Image (cartoon, protein in one colour):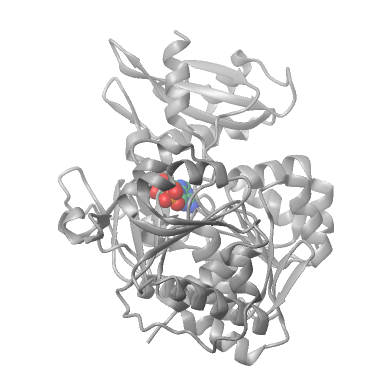
Amino acid sequence: MNLVSDFLRKSALRFPEKLALVDGEVRLTYAELYAAANRVAAGMRALGLQPGERVSYHGNNRWELVVTLFAAIQGGFILVPLNVMLRPAELEHILSEAGIRLILTTAEGEATARQLQEKFGYRLCSYDDPDGLFARWFAQGDPGEIQAHRAADDVLALFFTSGTTGMPKGAPIDHEFVSHLAHSWVISCRYSPAEIFLVTTPMFWTVAPMHCIIPLVLAGGSIVLMNRFDLTRCCELVLQHRVTSFFAVPTMYTLLVDQKADTLRQMKSLRVCSVAGAPITAEIVNKFESLSGATLLNIYGATEAGALAREMLDAPRKAGCAGTLGGTVEVKLVDKEGKPVPPGTPGEILARGFTAIKGYWQQGRVNRDSLPDGWFHTGDIGVLEDGYFLRILDRAKDMIITGGANIYPAEVERVVGLHPAVQMSALVGLPDRVMGELPIAYVVLRHAGAATPAELEAFCREQLSSYKVPRRFIIVESLPLTPTGKIQKGELRKLAARST
Ligand code: AMP
């Protein structure tokens, strides 16, 4: 059995001539993608790699990474996607945790990967080397079908969570996780072989391979790759390939509705899009939907727990909520003592089940003891509304406590974002001797000078209890973002501390 490898195998049988993957001038049909994955898997085997050993891709999005993804699945190797932007000091921790045998890199990553090679002893090959391992494997003769046996709980990939703070931890994603997750995407977005899906997010983050590419291959749709996110290129690719669906993080949707409204109106092919990774305001969702005509589904996900809640096509939705719970994972909301809270009361969101990790990767294995009581603690605070809609209030550690009162930044950011001059905002807590913390808002305006801090404050006073109104509004040109497009609150906290 190899649950997930069957997705590509079956699509190659059903639709051999259908376009599976487009990357610039490169186009691979399903038969070609499957054959390439078999050849690369055979090459990895010939190096002596055994099922369960770790291999990595290391580069911006390109077709070779997709082939590597499926080769690893077919050969039963554990894929460890590496962020090509990481500096050697940041990579060292991941390399020592993961024990990687082979890294396939790109011209932009080679120098870093080479610097650490001696210390960690992995094989290294650049996709850009015309005589390198990958080029030779890709050119070799047909080795036949490679399908290593994998049990449902065998690890398929290990993602080191990007996190906005702390040391990255290895989240082992097993076959059962990936399979259930893929089916939940196909069902909720009704992906079909007619789908043309644009991948906008980087392949080192779980979203592109696990939430986009594998579900699309299960459905037999076509995948268009974007090398790195670029607003104009994203629009061009949608129009050029008549894209029907894409996933993006909230910042990207904000930029699209603000800067590309006319182009969105031309995107007649778009059918259903999806968003996750951070809170998105109902205003941006509504604007995107009315400009493009596509439905924008909000998914609440985490590297460690797939999709904990999701909106589905044609199912009831509630503005500002991230859909309804469960399907592939059991979810509960608990108070500080770990006791379940009743609907309507905020609590921390916990998950366990098919699409949740069974433990973090520690000392070369999945350590089940690393999850308290077997539950993954998201660190997010949510509330169940009307019995089943999940509203994400905030991350537990982003919550600001001022004079003993809790402020959920997402709530305040939503209100600040309603001001017509505001493009984006982020609220952080500034330590204060008396109040504990004070809420400070960093704001990016749509146009320079479009609003003053005093105007923003007056606007918030009309809509928020006074303790929630930011004590200061700091207008900035941009907010610090992680490589996956999330706001780095840690950086803003440091900035706020320095600005006093
Ligand atoms: P990552 O593991 O990098 O995908 O980050 C997961 C975290 O992103 C979650 O724990 C949430 O804090 C945040 N997140 C994901 N989806 C949503 C969403 N739809 N609304 C609000 N926050 C989200």
